Length: 98
Image (cartoon, rainbow, N blue to C red; front, side, top):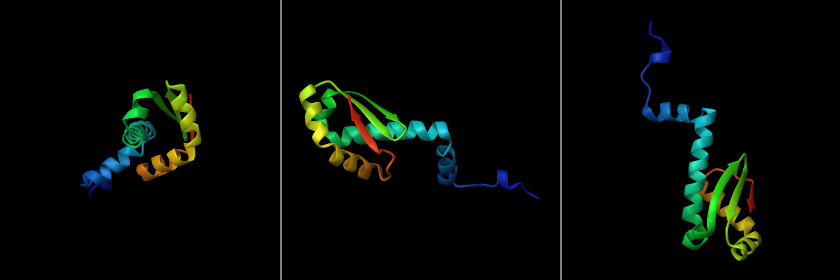
């Protein structure tokens, strides 16, 4: 009898299982959020974005330009919607600008 643990599986299935591990999933989410931020927000915003951190379901963004940060405060619901649409899932529930 063969052991099902050692049966051939597709690479897609193996990678999906591997990515569900807690540490790997968290790292992949962080990288994906950074990519989506850069693609969605444009060159001007990226110029003043110092750092991005995903803390649970909260995205913490450090913006070095006070005027830009104030303008972005008014657009947070639209930014959140845009990021979550690009992520194809909704890991971000809140954005905090610092």
